[in-house]
Length: 208
Image 1 (tube, rainbow, N blue to C red):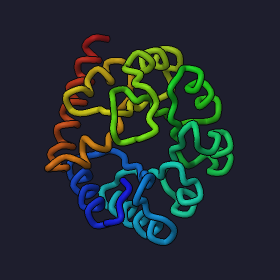
Image 2 (cartoon, rainbow, N blue to C red; image 1 turned 30 degrees about the vertical axis):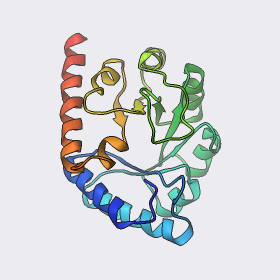
Image 3 (cartoon, one colour; image 1 turned 45 degrees about the horizontal axis):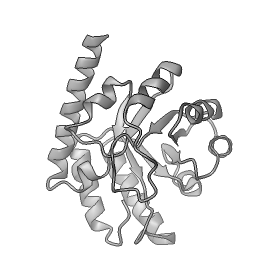
């Protein structure tokens, strides 16, 4: 959610909260990303909004910021600080998410104390310029079978129309940026996503 205009992203976040998102992750990276005090102030504003709606607030990559804000969680990628080191720094109370792309990486994240793993990109995505090759839902199914106690969040190119296969494969949830942030009506887009996920869970439970 990088932007030099903090008001617009905050508006989008509030609409998403109104629509019913269950978690928010501050991902301030890429061209135009805020730095220093501006980033801190923006993060505090996002955290305040999340608290108003009772929604957990996560920080992407920036462990120092997550600790300073006493965030609900921190999410790191394979190119960021090693998960075991992050777990030592944040203690046992803060949740830890780790981006993974293979079963081996998922096993390592689980061993390092990850609360959940983000797996993908499931579908093609233009949000991350350094995204890995598209993995589809097959790896989600593999990891869900291998480590059933580890929650998996599907990441990458997910929309209301293609979210169902991600849940059917064994994911506990999805993470999106464009599906909400680029929508003409972020609140309604969130509602549509929640409806699609609810239907997918019904179908998955029936299949079981």
